Image (cartoon, rainbow, N blue to C red; front, top):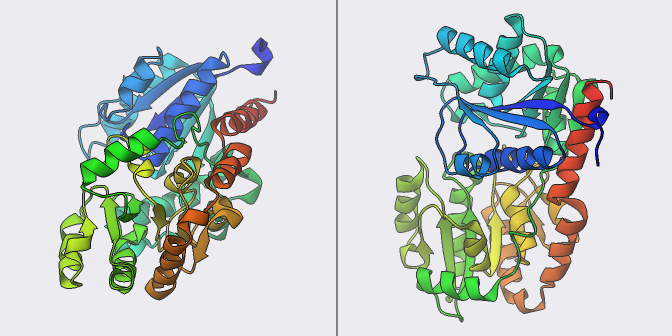
Length: 378
């Protein structure tokens, strides 16, 4: 039983509660903090997304901050200030850049609380995005010395933040937590998912589970697929997700002549089933990755992983998978072909054990709790 000294009141701030990796980590943290007796509230710019129900079903309030669009700025800040003032938390912990800036601005409006930021990316190529992204990031860098604690979810993310002016003494690393009770090998789910995808047991399913964003490296994945398609004709390549790049990637598959071997099944409502349906998981990211949830979740499902050395992916995989340089389709193709030829030899339980020992949800919640209490001097 924890004492009052071991508990605190926390206001978690995020843009939405969509099904992204950062949002799922926030939900896991909120649930874990509440189970340990902390008072938890979640504020969202827009009250939308499938994870809202996950919190409200556990009696964690999700407060709609009512943002009316991109240019709803000053009025929005005062609405957030009013909501946080009414909640009177000891700590405001914000997730992702926009929420970090809002939390910092609200504290400048006279509220007293400890401010904690989350850093969840590394080595971002901001030129790939509209002007607001680099502007926001530069503002984060300038304001970072006003924050009580910054939690990076990867060592790569911490190094990148420090190189851009974040104070190293305020930065701690807490790797993401993988829900190993949810993500586990399931032969029945595997059969059902492959049937849904129209795959036979003899097909070798190699997949990427990620939004269609330039940082995720889908083009490198498709370029690697071309090199494998003739060599291993029973390989099938799955791009699971949605995003603005989808139509361009589909056209890319057509142009490369591999449309018949590539599937775009859309966003998965059940990532456990999607991962179990694969024979090999690929993370071909070319920049921006911090801690890849999908890599850890695939390993928890005992699926062999081929990853680029971006973010902490190599650290997560260790000696249980294959690591290649970023933006190198030839090296990626060679590793995927090797993984396909050795898949019967892959010790999936070794990969799962690595996640259990190093990247479980419990470790993430306990380490975060320690850091939050430390900001309060406890």
